[in-house]
Amino acid sequence: MKRQRILAALLLVLLLAGAGTAAAAPGYAPGPAVDRALGRALEYLHQAQNADGGFPASPGGPSSSQVTAWVVMALAAAGEDPAGVYWAPGGTSPVAYLKSKDKPASTADYARSLLALAAAGEGEGAKAKELARVLAGRQQADGRLGLAGAGEEGLINYHIWSLLALAAVGQAPPQREKALQWLKEQQNDDGGFCWYAGGPSDPDDTAVAIQALLAQGEAVSSPAVARALAYLDSCQEKDGGFRWEGPRSNLATSAWVMQALLAAGEDPQGPRWQVAGKGVVDFLLTMQNGDGSFLWQKGVLSSPVQMTAYGVMALAGKHFPLAGKVSSGQGAFSDLPPTHWAYQPLEKLAAAGIFSGYPDGTIRPEKEVTRAEFATLLARALKLEGRGEQAPLSFTDVPPGHWARDAIAAAAAAGFIRGRSDTVFDPESSITGGEVMAMLIKALPPKEQTAGAAGPHWYSLPVSVAEKQGLLYPGFDPVQRASRGQCAYSLEKLLALLGKR
Image (cartoon, rainbow, N blue to C red; front, side):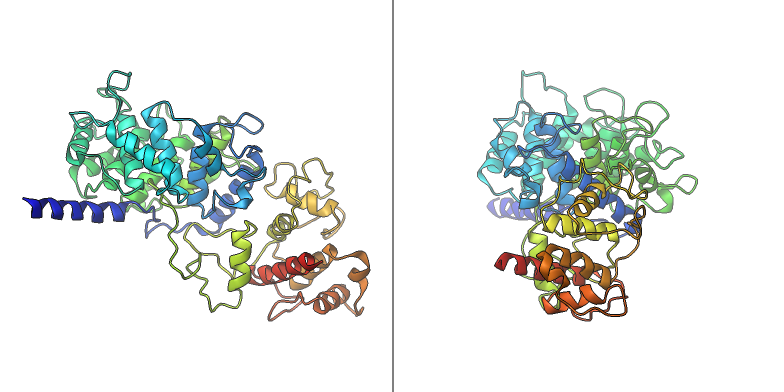
């Protein structure tokens, strides 16, 4: 009997170890459009963050623990460090904000907070351990997770989120089989789940139920999962999105359904999940506004910060539960070995929140950088963010609401960047080596900006100055497009130079 218990415990550890990390499904290929959407969304979230480290439902509102938890998960899904300095504009990160809050009120609040802390890599901390202890202690005799006599009886959604939260820290309820059985008993004849026992099916709770079952070791081939996926299939609309009530798709439902598909190993862009040639990724991309935020429904802006967090998690290709990064000793990015020539500058600038990685764990050092992206990197590096909100901008191709407008306006107002003309910045064109150096030397003292040799080209003087200051990256060519690794190299050299002064 003892041997059987040990084997059972070992099996559970293996199951949860595999389920605890939210990896993108092998068939999901985000592509450039998704990368751009994620970049705009992250910039929007950064602008929406309050000085206390928390996030409001809408920019300018009070911070909400609930919204902040979702954003923390979204940042982790996108490869950001939600506990890092970049996400602590007033000195407090969203993770610190969550940890400072009093005890959550409901079981769902406990679960959400634990999911966020685990996603941020805080799953082994004292706060997370206490949250997990409380959740595990709320299992009832029938297997349900939730308080007794507190209005939580029959709340399937509380049970689902508790299963996910415990899985995020590598745990199961004290009676795991009972917990799974109770959930499967709540499945309706159509394959879906409701948020409360006996209610009609809805795709939101069905999508999260799939993720909870799989996170706690249910086989992807199980009848419960197959029936739930079939129900979700029936909820897809012609625009590729998914509906809840009424005939119109909405972002929240579509994002959670996409996460369920990823968890089940489905390709959300595959033929099964296409309607008239459109899939859920196509729908999500159509829901993004010019400022990087996401609509709830077409024409309906509701809790845009929370909707943006939902959109980021799905488009990043991550499902619940998300788990924090585990250091492998090989650097933070899978495509950046310690032997890479740009390893040190990219690692340093990523740790400082100036550069961001991609959802698949890469940083893509050879990828070209657009003029808008470089302006954003420069604004972050020189701490100009927030200064462009009220600054006038003459570039007609950078309208209000453009994801990089604040950074471009701040850098232009400080004299670091210039447009192609007085009215054209050309934000989406790749930046060249000469343009990089022309912008970087503007951070030097005025006398040093002209202490070089003039020449036949517009870039001759700035390149000469940059060479004298040691800012040129390996393989520099003034007319060739600059890569992320090259921009990082020169930016890091500039910051080191300014730091010495």
